[in-house]
Image 1 (tube, rainbow, N blue to C red):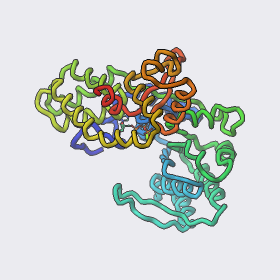
Image 2: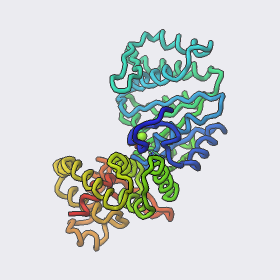
Image 3: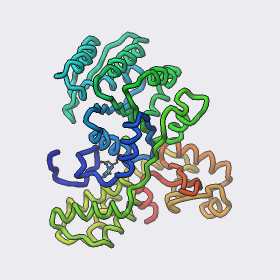
Image 4: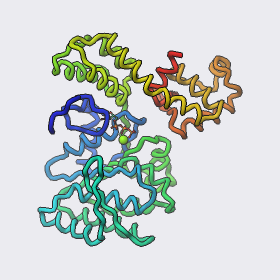
Length: 375
Ligand SMILES: Nc1ncnc2c1ncn2[C@@H]1O[C@H](COP(=O)(O)OP(=O)(O)OP(=O)(O)O)[C@@H](O)[C@H]1O
Ligand SMILES: [Mg+2]
């Protein structure tokens, strides 16, 4: 990959040079796929699922083709078909005979090709009659089944299929998926309750059809040495304590670590100390303030109060406990539970489990949390 001006990237994947660690996760995912196991990848938002998928897809054995499909923007099966066709078109080389066969199939669907103005990548739109999408999705996958290389298809934000108006999309997809021997899937999603609903509920078609892989924050030591390496590469010096303070402030949450490092790097003086990063952190909070006020407008009074309380605490284990409720004047446990659910659905907060299996709640937006804690 070409070198870039700031090594702390905040969107996409730019190759292993700018990708920190994830060695265990990479090996686990790769090993699942190579051994014929489709995998469900779950984690909270902005922790690095998409990055990990992209990383693994570039590290598959030689005789593998990796196809990445993001279905977040799709709202129905027709759009799913378009996303799939676009991904296959961008990945499978036409030069080989089997590649040509697949691309001929895509051409037979008479796609309209447009180019994404931002990325320059082609976007294909197939005009299908209502009810025909299923058949074409099936044919597309069957063509890939006949491809002479092993195929891995990563479907990112898979829980989105639950929003499709077509009933039983999961039953339809499951029935095709289980008939395929040459294709392994990565199903990735950030809405963990929906992903477990799809894959861990015995009454759902995808139940026990793939193994779960949950990813966590990047190991502190590995992140610290990644950060130091990139600063030193640019001949800046940065102390251990400064790096650790930055990691703490961003709560080791990948996107926020990257964002802060990106800013500090951009403003770099030769020697980076606590004053430097704190200035950038304060700037970030100031920039975001307008967004935080928007949060308040979008929430009920009770929800806003609870959000502030959780932000203030950082992590909350017992949101309906007397102490917590009284400490923040939150009303009754029933009110708190209702707000908790609403805030989860709005993706303002998330719940997760500690290693010991204890559930906890936390605010998604680390910057918001820091902003709240300063007030
Ligand atoms: N291992 C890594 N090293 C360095 N940066 C990373 C790493 N993994 C992810 N990132 C960066 O962190 C940010 C968030 O990562 P990514 O988009 O992969 O998260 P995600 O879990 O897919 O988030 P979402 O749930 O919002 O889709 C991106 O800017 C990405 O470039
Ligand atoms: Mg993602």
